[in-house]
Image (cartoon, rainbow, N blue to C red; front, side, top):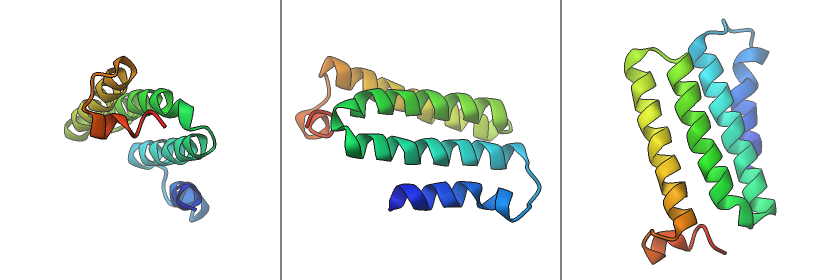
Amino acid sequence: MLALVLIVWAISPFLRHQPITNDVMATAIILILIAVAYLIIMFNPGWTKAVFFFEGIVIGVSGYMLLAYPYSIEFVIVGLIIVIIAILAYMQKLPPNILKWFYR
């Protein structure tokens, strides 16, 4: 249900014929990819680490390329943190209480 809400929220500016800016595009891309990630993880929990890694890359790159200066750096930092967490989960170097979310 959350995935569908995120997808509807992402495409609503296009349906309401609002001006399409870089902020709208970045938000739509990120929301749709997070919704797709939730669906993938729900049906195949073994892909959690890979989806988390991919989300980090997409958030960092789309934020950097589509948003203005101060926000672009914030999105790159958030994306980098997500990628580092995914890599540490692959290497099993996270604390057990966090690692349980990646290995089910």
